[in-house]
Image (cartoon, rainbow, N blue to C red):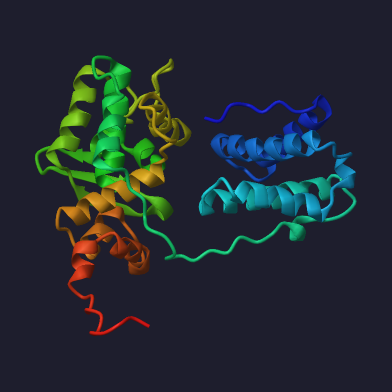
Length: 305
């Protein structure tokens, strides 16, 4: 989780009003509100450091300069998130009368392409560090280890991990039922290492409770983990391991690249990750360099143009 940025009390009150707006009007999760508020505070702190005036004096030049500065240090996805947050905040300022101009359109657009970059999974070394950061001598460590294994081996999303119930595991058949987005339900094979990690937590880490959720939160009452709680499992693990922040999407990429390197086809990867569209899985074609090399034609003899 990001450290809190301190801004002027008057500006902080505006940020807190914006947080309430996001929570109650836009119905965003607490995690999303935390991330967007961090961006807003960073923008306001940057603007204050430059001696800028009141929010009513916001100018398009401020927005362009801030986005340019952030683009120099962030990856494309993070810059796009910054742009989206700024536009939302500017619409909020205009709607609440804190700014007399609607400046959301003045935030620079970020060019993007769906297939522009490589899907970035964790290296074997860093994945090992991430998993080893869990102290499996403790109930919490066993729980977090099992969560991470489900995410990096089967590509489960945080919400899918949170929805797992004891009835979803068919131990005799070696299968797992996953309740995904949009009411989708899939049955996946349960690899031995994944099943072993979950079984270890169930036998030696999960508290006694009538709750049927597989993963129980670490503090009373003994109820199932929320999606937000699962989101922070890989983030805390990456901090313990001394790695850059690792999120659930990065672990899905890791699962896909591991399957490809083990010889799985793109279609098989798409089935495990439960993609509705084959073009989504196609981003991993660039990772499967061994297969791509078979279809690359040699450069004709002679000098290249």
